[in-house]
Image 1 (tube, helix red, strand yellow):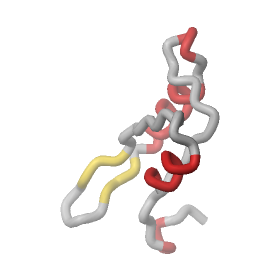
Image 2 (cartoon, helix red, strand yellow):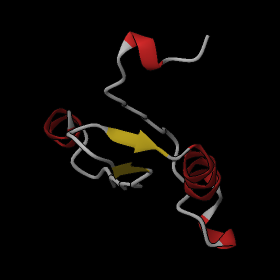
Image 3 (tube, rainbow, N blue to C red):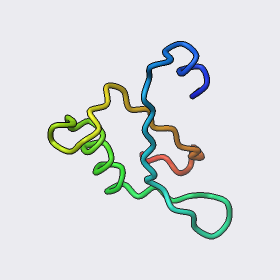
Length: 69
């Protein structure tokens, strides 16, 4: 996806916020408070020490059983 975005819009700035930590095995636990902090920080204007992003994409490799009801 990053390649497609940079190819379409060469002046794009891409930022990455890590909000998951590895646990035993190859799955990662998503830290929900970290997700909330990342969204707030990422969307906050640069003048307020944020990144001022326009689009936030969150992709998780969750099994259907892991989703909340």
